[in-house]
Length: 266
Image 1 (cartoon, rainbow, N blue to C red):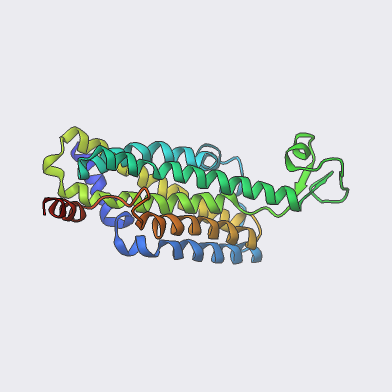
Image 2: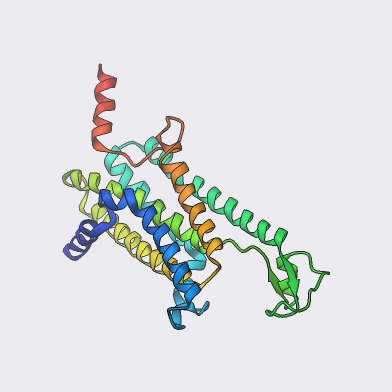
């Protein structure tokens, strides 16, 4: 148990709940996209295991990125927010951020596929020498064993940036949980710490695979638009809408809760 606590403290002190990191991480992602695109264009890096699409992290984590994020964030938000607020209504309200996130993920995924279908054509080979005009969409073309080429906005750049930014916002509540530690059952505190550690590992994987996407895959514009979509989704929700009364809201803070109680008593 002490090992879990120490590990959680290491992650907390390193970067994941640091205010400066949370405020500027979107610019780190933009810089990675731009720098990685330049590296890819001049082909500075040799081939490696991570530009093989069937690598373990890509197959078992990146392709299921939203599922991993959802499965770990849901219990973390529920438990940590309840420990701070002691209000099931706040927990339910805050958990709806994952409904919003799922809608954002689905909408952008659909949009990217739609744009690729709208702008693409089916070719007999990867060299794009012969057009197969009878196939009008990506799914039918690939099902028949041919190659679809269209404007392929990077879904990885979008999803990995959005997931990482979302996790950064949600784990900020760990500071408040620490202040409430004396009022939290040790088992509950350990579960929250385990989930916190798991989310930190997810961030590390998402950022690493985001870097690999930047330096090995897609055209520069495709990656820039994908990253911009992820950053815009985070900014629109956490920096704009979630500040409004009729929204899922931001992670609870003890100070804000005390002010609400004081106002209610008056």
